[in-house]
Length: 372
Image (cartoon, rainbow, N blue to C red; front, side, top):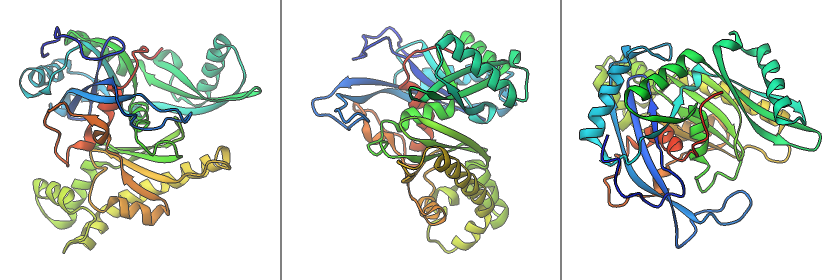
């Protein structure tokens, strides 16, 4: 997997890389945080962040989608083979570590914000477990459960609880063991995306973040951390399939039309919008639902100000204009590559840049551990 015994770069701790496993492809990214001569952005406490990001390596590879069934990796050897080919022949740059952070698709997780009184950590863990039993439709002994404190006052706290089926997490750990990797972090894709977005220069305002996956889109409200989430059926491949059917073109032609024209001005703009509108309206409806929830619970002092799109379908032409019109919020694509020192390496194409969002967020993670 590359020359993992190279001289280390400017890491403040032992490095790791991000591994994002999708429906039929995997993405890897390794970044370093290095001291910068000039600060790159302000963080939430208004002090200057003295670091910038340095690219070590990245790449993507495809595999047979039959290797994953309902989120469980059932053929780890298939994905391991694709990864090894990537490490040997297709990387841009290098992967210099065997420590890896992984993400579980958000649609396979159960996420909920929970209100609690101020408790000690041991009492808090038990309280989260008791609350989780009320909303998770599976026995908790079949789940890994973890949580993050979102807000805390002298009287109460809000935590974001995340539960994932054990068979899914265990299958990911089996894969990393097969590849000779050490898994140091497993989290939901939205957690990774939120971490990535935190490096954006406008991440200090409350935002709707939409991560367009292959078959579904994850939506969250972000305010110095993820406050609430939702998932909607419909992603990049769903857009392609809809264009293929409506315009009576081949799958490859539909993919080209989506990435080249999308919802932008073209001779077939009206047909394309008609094809995509049912999926886009499901996304708009879910955004409005989460927006109402946020406004009721948090929004009096910090109203939502923008919509951020990312992921494989997040940079489709005309998408930002569509969302701006439907949601009455400024919408744009977040491109973390703008904040990365490429170190002379070839950057991904304009079309491919957004699909590395989750892997980049994983690459920025501290090695804190797997789901409990």
